[in-house]
Length: 176
Image (tube, rainbow, N blue to C red):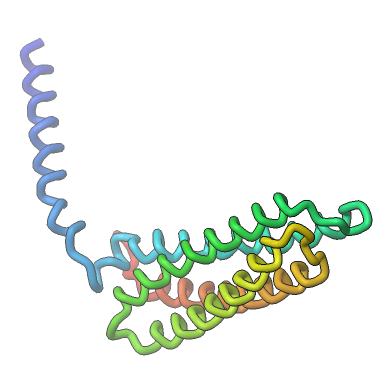
């Protein structure tokens, strides 16, 4: 019994030492951020946010096409516009973090410029959609046109984002 208690105590001390020893590594950023997966987290979160906005921008026109006489329920239109806006804002936040980490990587910065440009275009189309959806009588055609712009911009941003993430994953050293 005493042997088991001693073994558990040794394991506990080793676990604490491991945790304490790894804290400084996680506090640092820069080149090691790729290895620790921080780019993957923010990159994945940005992609999920862009896909979320895109899903709403595709679902809304389907709703409008099935609405009786294409009379759009303003509450549904506002909910779709709000959700699209939230997802675009989240994607921009994650991309800003990635830009800070890629400060000296010109190839990555070029990709981030393309992504940011397309996110800005999506945000502009979203603003137009939001303004259209604030009206009591939502213009179905105009709001669907805004969704078309959002979807096109997000499609380009996602394509460039996928290229960037593949490049970053390829640059990551193989784990032992």
